[in-house]
Image (tube, rainbow, N blue to C red; front, top):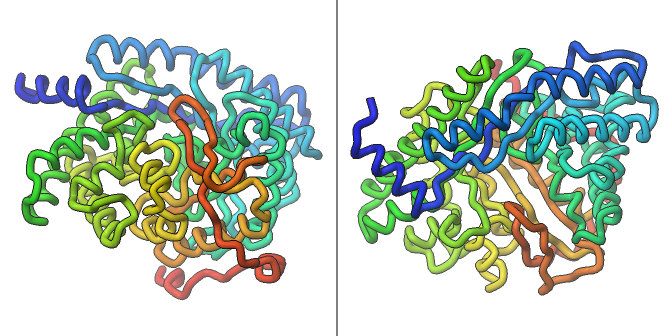
Length: 454
């Protein structure tokens, strides 16, 4: 039972500390829509999504109103489209039509984004998967709500370096096609190692093939809540610090669990997971970087930052799994450069570099997220950055990702504007030495030896 003190405490977190439920994401399997006729496939996809998601947005609004809990986004994830379109799609233009179908269905449902224009190629690419990947620049430049992801590696299979090389090229093409909007298309494209099947956050959400027909997944947020809690124990020992983060993560996760259960019951759709990731926004006071400075760092990126982030990530998980038996997705701390006011400030001051961010990804939930780089960066350099991050995920048996944005026409010291939750980002320098010869090698990096432990 929740007592009146907890109700008041939750209200305080919502009103003054930026607590929100970042997303309710409805996962929809499209396996039963498959057809070798493209027109029929498009109709099947549109009909299923619009029918199954017709009550999602209105239900989310009802829960917001009834409980006073902000739900920022309502989203849909679908089965990776490389699989769904394999029989009917024979060219990038065919997959573009599927992307437009997803976009139309998402708009009809009234959601903010739809994820799943995706391919899973950690060991190799089928013809259909390569064709979908080649269609990504078209799809992201000619749709509004579609998000795309590609899984390039895993701890069990190694890293498909042919796909890594291809994605460097695809990211540059996507940047060029959306250059009038500061290469915004790249903000809707993420590459993964060890991608989870139940992630509710964009741009990486897709409905995994191991999932049921429908599922409700919820992503919570709360950096501001954690920062406020830590400000009340300023200078305390590490033991007190850890306990405070755990207790706060417990409270935040309980809010997500409540929303997830309510949405599941009202929609008649099974509840999947709560992703308890600390997801920042551009709003002042809603920053993971501010948590790190509250711990005692002068600036995010200073010596000790990786240790502080490791502590934060672990305690968030420990508190969250006490509040819900269904924690999943990514769960931990996002460290995006564009969506976190404190991270933006640290990068502008020169304290936070892409190399330090890479080190931080070794201990956090995701990877290099929303990093704006000069538009003239070589596609091979982009592939090298991706390969480094995939290797961290593969060897450490964790999810890592790269969402990098070469902003065409802009350079170091300038700023890219994305708007909304995506915010803005300073363009940071990248290492100018070449890795082209390494990236041009064919084949894959084999799985590490610990993958044989099963």
